[in-house]
Length: 295
Image (cartoon, rainbow, N blue to C red; front, side):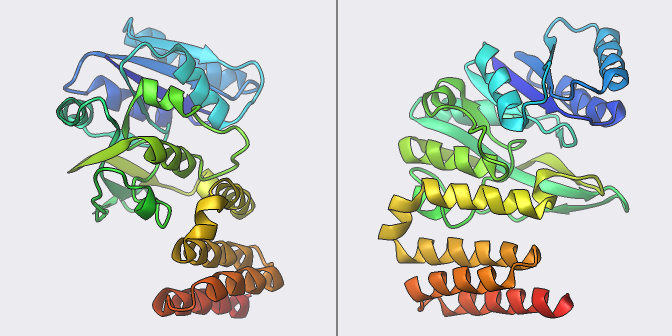
């Protein structure tokens, strides 16, 4: 069985319904759906969500309402704590799955065996304003992939992978202190202990819209990247390229927040540690200068 967890917070019920309907349309039917509502003060929306679930009349769906707003990581861990499935799959409340998502990934997971903790997939991006759909190019890596994953989170957001539940529990689930990049943090912790695999088929539709995601909040992005670097610092200190890449990318976020002095200081730390990474160092310097002159 797959435990599907949708966490929601202050989302319009019709958008959440789109995500739920994409679970109901799965060709793979052995699942439970846990909806964790982390918006305690949104009484009208909560009532609408409860009524929506009642109309679906599906015993596989359960609804959990947090009494206190606790953040996405805690909400995801709530779902993890009660999940009964051998596998767990998260779906952001504003994304949707294509119908074969679970079937394809479960089949791949069974082929890969118990030593493989996570199966990721390709996805497409829909611009909600225009309706345009663009597939994203998938970066394919298999096996013990920590060395490449620390350079770039090509697994993507929580909506994409299928994960062995016992493996996710073994690494401690989601870190509530992460204000952003919570997904990348978990993928790295899994990659340190287990094999990772992927399917190259597009299985998820990511919706790009004008509402706020964590990824659109620069201050949260900075806090998350700083904590992620700190948690992986023993590795970064031993691997100059990884140290350099992670610091020049963090420097760009400082520039986007208007902290130019700090941006240049962190950028130079990365360049000094890895001066031979000329192409990427130059590219990010241009990005930082562009942020400065645009302001």
